[in-house]
Length: 404
Image (cartoon, rainbow, N blue to C red; front, top):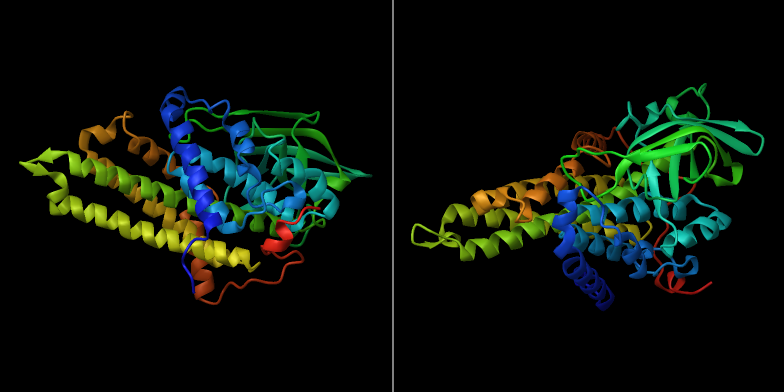
């Protein structure tokens, strides 16, 4: 068992950290205040290869493994959660799901421009009256010859107004014996006729990110854009969440680290009662808790990255990593504000923004309550993973870095 990072992993860490710290950190506070996305950030992430970091070279990607994806997410969210959100929806929900379930023709047609950053993808699953209850989706897709006619609305969709494609799950069989068996998934061109979309405002956090809605009215989706077989939409959506939750767990680990670094730095400088507050035991207790949570969260997402590299399904492990890391990150950001006192409450310091941002991660990609039920189901023997027609793709260094 080897917990050391390879030179390639260290290279990813260094490159992403320099980008986030040198290019984004100096301006993120301004855009958070304006509640606007940084206008150049998607293009820049594409130029750096981040939007195709863990896709095979044959599809235009960088050919890096899944742990590299996690390391990149940690570095990005240590600066701002909205950077990691791009990775979650473009790489995780959309790209990796297409890599797992798409045909060879679909991968070359859709995954290649996504991997190169020429097109932006997102996942459109949540609806105004449906979040965690995926089987309750009301968006419909009616088959008419070589097309599906898509109607409905998706809500709380990251990059809704920025993306070119969306992975959309809709109800194709209202008469299915079980609601979960009546769903199918499609890759939808968001520039199609009948689509309207926009941004949501007034969010507590993620203010420098794009979160919005997509409305479908008689949108014609070609048959060849269906991902998987008809009726496989629920399974595909669940596998998409596995990919997305991994990036969320890794990113939240970055917030814990940011809180730890900011708190230790401030505690050494701030003097109270005649000595640096770093010498007060209650401050040390807070910092020790952050350090412990960081080490646990990091090991949990590293384990998931290792399992994904092997091509093993890791729904249980991903659920644990996501729940622990997001809740620990919220605790760490909250305690970091306490360490900073009144300064921590001001947006001149980063921690109040991290606290606002990280709160959302405890809700989306499956709330903590949903993760608790998943973990209890496995522990009690009430839940087990059944074989999928398309199992997660393993990382093969020779195959993934070999050009077409």
